[in-house]
Image (cartoon, rainbow, N blue to C red; front, side, top):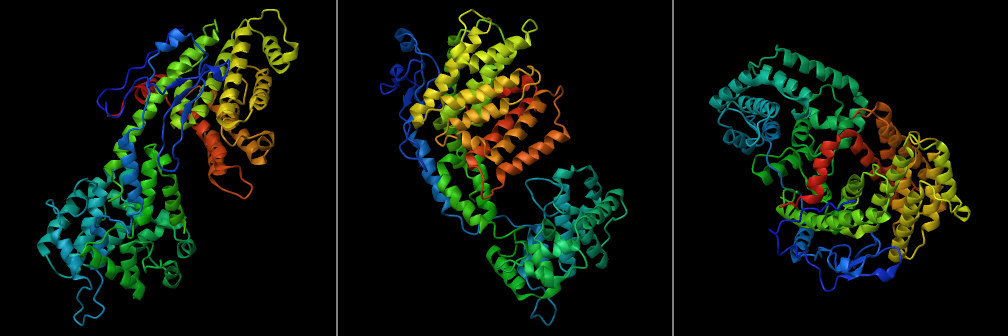
Length: 626
């Protein structure tokens, strides 16, 4: 087969990517008779220090003159990544209560509080009232100026009009705001549900009722408002009041939109800082009903800190830290900050930092470095398959197999697992495609399985599957050798055992065989430093996870259309729960996560058509991020 040459990365970041054959790059054909490995001088910073990254054997030794002409990119870790790591680590230590922009809606509720020491009955927080007066937008509304969301604008505007009208100030601003509400309320029916303000069906009807008490004319007989009232009733019926009173559910964020509450029970859910679920609006409403001093102290501190205009939630350090962790994980650079992330999550269970360009710039450098290594591996995967010398033209999904492995296990230091996954997938596809041919009977599959499991009875007569058998043995030897080099553990007997199980299942028929997903999972786990041996494979939780993933992936593989059935979704939910929920007798987290990771690739195959997947492959493996 021909070698597909991947397009080289751009030379824009030449200082970052010095793609050349280093004099220190070593080829080690002496490591074994079945493969070579390349040693890269690769120092990881952060949690792991001074690790020599070894890209293990992925092809047979070639002639020296051929090796000398292979253009292998040698990736040096750039100084810029170290600087980014150092800088981002400092951000973790700088998070205090977090920073967040003011909310007109919450500020309006705070402004409604009557002065506790005022004989004349003035506002407790005149600075909040002043903030409202100073932040009306040109169209008469209040709310987020950079993004227009009709539900956000209407909720904020009506709340601010109510606050100003209550204290009989700025009638011109009230009129302009009320005109905005009247002219735009019909647009609520055109807004997608996912874009609507959270708790809209609770808080907006409450605002309409408050406006009515102030003789403010708000259209409430339109179909969209009538439907909103119905939605409110359905939501209130769905969650029992006792649940609201005893559990800090998301409903409490919209406390001001609820009636007939038992405040003695609700105050038991009060946070140490005096807030109700860190929400200024819910806390302001609670103070109006209870005159609780802790609520007032929280609001007083907040108004002073933010000079009148209070945020939607405060403090936000938990939100900010969660966002930081999520951002780093999504960008694929969380591995540099494992200790910081652990400290962060430990703190959460007992944000200026969210939109930080350093995360993105470091992620670009790291992505391009990983991509360079993946392109090298892909080139060698092609050579590996060509070296197997399988004559038949069959569907191996060679590039797809490597792509699925590389996008799931992308870190350079996890090369062994990634390549083992890709090769296992290729060999599975090769064998199933070969025996799916009409002229090959089920007897041939049985003979193939028998020959693999009984190597001492190997017949010398030439058989049509000889190339398959040699490819399988050679691949298992390579995977085993690479793991032995990396961790000093011989996994060949275990690899042989799990392949024996899969081949015996294959005798049931190519279209009925199950166990491909389990085979991949076990191979990946065996290639780790914490190898799972037979006793671990017999663990009840491992067996349950294996049963679920086999069921899910078998059903997905035999779906004709690109839909996921309810049965598959239910199984997937069970798998996620087993993976993410901890128990005393659990498997280790990494082994459990492997099940979910492999299941996701089967989902991916089912949901995207081949053309879209090819587009993804081109972007992920062969296009630099600039």
